[in-house]
View 1 (tube, rainbow, N blue to C red):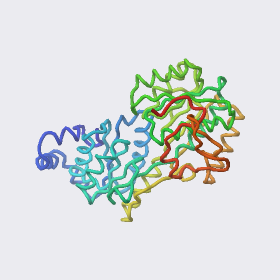
View 2: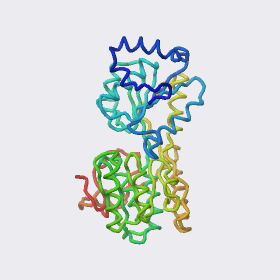
View 3: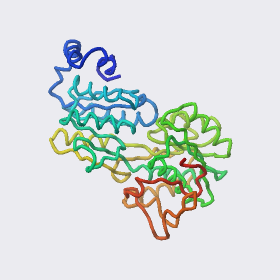
View 4: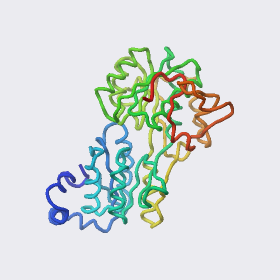
Length: 375
């Protein structure tokens, strides 16, 4: 629901034609007119804002803007990656006067956000993770994302020191490049501690499938994995299930330590507050909004959860040292010699890729030592 009224935007637009809906909004919500002088920014989430994961990370970033003078925030949660998101965006524009909209979920970009860009050329749209391309996409569109693979590498460093079985587990949604990069980074971090460590990955097929996520976590523990991480919308089920089985966990998206205080090692988190403040500052001053925005740990786009009580001194020392190197910029997660888990050479000796490289954003392989398939 939005911050300002309980009636669903999609339900409101379904009740009548657009013109009638606008008339209804004007009569029923006079507060909108009173706030018309402020700049309105819209945020759309595919799940609940308190999911301990992807949506919560974005909502926490949006919340920091509520104290910014001249900025009005509207939000809607639990919006599926269907035509429903188009209706939500349209209502934010027509009913709230939004001039900047952040559709945060992966599947919102094409065709949904792109369709609204053409319909509302004076509104700016910025999508999380969408691969905006100046040769293909409109100029009132854009994308932003963070290089969080470095965070998963740090997760792996701590996991590598913690594991006794030398078997790690990874619950993943879909084999898209960013997910594959996170899996590879996690294992490479662990292998910086012990090259014999392996990682089993299970893909659930969707961003949010609680039952399958629980089943996958249990299966990984059953196969000997004693440290688990994930890339799904809400790590809550994975974290609680793994900890309940006695495994340690590394978090993702947001801080899940309250869910498993004794078993939570650390986590790779988004720091969207900085990113959203950058966009809003440009909006207020009238500066052009960037179309392609990326940053990592050194840029403040990504942060790490505090180390948990189970993390030993050796792990803390390597974690701190590696983090310090990353903060200098130019840290290479993928470096050769390295092969995929199907035997193909992905990096030769002396070859290294930083996460800003296009090779990583188009990653289509899992590295040797990852037990699982992209198929």
